Image (cartoon, rainbow over the protein chains, first blue to last red):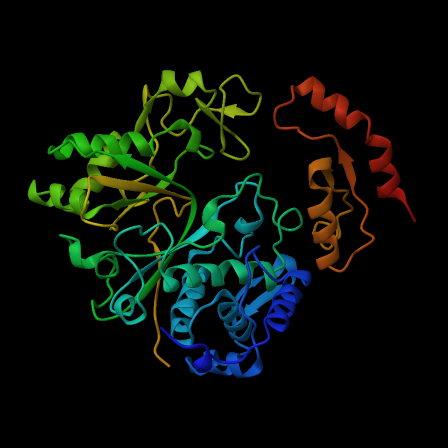
Length: 361
Length: 68
C-alpha cells in the first residue's frame, strides 16, 4: 500500500472542473473523458509516421472529415494509451474500406454501431482481450479503442443523438465495441490469415453491427444440432429489413472444438449455415415480409402497393443469406461453456470483410 | 442536392426529423433552408392517409418553389 506522502499532489476540485468543462462542451459520450494537452497529443502522434493532417475518413455530405490529429485527440480522450493508437488508425482504414460510414450509416435510424475485431500479436502487446467476457467490460485496450471511434463520431463529425444521429434506439455497442479473436484456442487459421494476411501481422476488421444474439448450447455433441441452432438464430425475421442479411458467427472455443472434432472446417460450417438459415414463405407472410419493395428492395408484405416478388421468385423456402460469403466466422470467448454468439452485421452482404493492417511507426 | 444540380426542389420530412434536418442544413451552409414537414409516421400509413397528409402541404410546397 502506498503511503499518503508518496502520492502526487493534485487538486480534486480542479480535476473535476476540467472534466466538467468537457461535459459542458458536449465532448463526451456521457462518461468522463481524459483531458488532452498538446504534450499528450504529441505522444499519440509519435506512434505513427502519418501526417497529422492526413484525412482518414471523410463525410462529404456533412462537409466534415476525420484527420490523424482528430483521431489522436479522441483516442486520448477515450483513455487509450499512446501505443494503442496504431490500432485506432487501422480501425479507421478498415472503416474507410468497409464504406458504410462515409455513406452515413452512423446517422441512420437503424442505430448500428461499429464493432472492431483485432487479430495478431498486437493483442498480447497491448493486453486486448479475446477470451472471457470478450463482449463485456474489464479491459482497457478493448474499452478505450472502441470508445475512440465513438468519441470521434461525436466530436469530429458532430453525430450527437437527436441531432445528426437519428438512431431510433441505438445499441449498447455505441459506447464501445472492440474484441480480439481467440486465435490461441481456435482450431482453424486466424481470421486475418484466412483472408490472406501473414500470421505475424496484426489487423483490425471493421463491421457495422446491429445486435449480438447469444446461442446457448451446452448440451450437444452433434455438429448438425449446433449448426442448426446457429442458423435458426441468424434467420429470425425481425432482422430482415433488407431482402437478406449478413452475420459474423463468434464461436466460443468449446463450440469451435466441437466442429473441428467432427471434421468441420470454417467453410463446412459456412455452407451448412447458408443452406439452413431459412424461413418458410408462410413464416414470412405471417410477419408481412413475404415480398420486397420495387423501389428500396426492403422487405414488406406482398399486399403492399410497392411489392414485387423477392429474388427467389416465390420459392417456398427462403434463404436469409445471399451467399456463403455473407457469413464470417471467428472464435472468441473463454473455453468454459457451450456458448456462442451471432453478431448481426449490416453488409457487405457477400463481399470480402474490411480488414486493415496495423502499421508500426 | 437536386437544387445544386439546377433542379428546383422542396424537401418534405416528417416532424420526427425536424432537428436533424435543421442540423444538416446548418452543416451544408444553408441555415435558412426552408423545408416542409408532415406528421410522423408515414411508412405505416395507407395510400389514402398519405394522400391526405400530402394534400395539406401542397400550398406550402408551391409557396417555397415559387418564392422570389
